[in-house]
Image 1: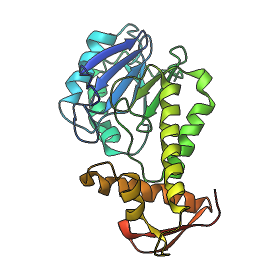
Image 2: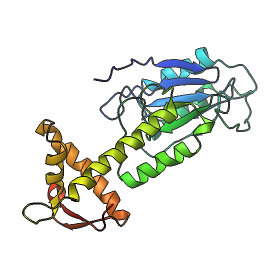
Image 3: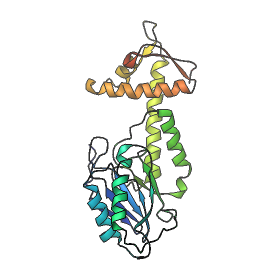
Image 4: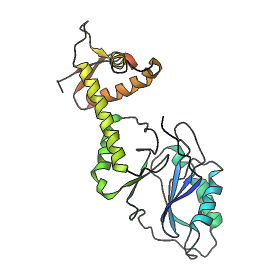
Length: 260
């Protein structure tokens, strides 16, 4: 079982990155949404805003006032807010964050020019694509694998990952490569099952594939496995390598269009 690293509400990760937890722990958010203050001095860039929990704003204010501090008194605390994607646990805090910044505004500050964040940390912010613990939830496996390959394509530019949830990942490219290898291994297992004709001559169903591949696992895990298998087969269908020939859910039936 994976050991859970307990994250503090405010953590300085490097000379130019401070993580502030969104104070919204949950099944899909782990210990909470990670928001990041980027920069060596104000004005900082804030990446994501949490989901609007009241407990987050005091933590962000503390990070700005005590951890980051206001070094340039003629500049605002934060000049730019970057929202990584539309999930509510990354976006709903925007109004409360703006209210905080208006309250902290002292009249001397002036708008600052945006400066691209993170250039010297060799770090990549992965939002929900790669998590610090566990695996990501996605809607389309083909798109997800394509995204992972795009991250690997410029792996020479980063080492560490700053994820949207969970602790930082020290060996980022290695973990992403492991994600891809695991998915490709599972896909190969699925294909190897479908390539073998059933004794009754019928097409393989998702449930039949699951019961073969996961035969050594408890059956209470098979429902989740069926969703994963369907995602793999939908990817193969989109690539013109497999075809859905009937059924729904775990009873969907599949055939290969060509030997892979």
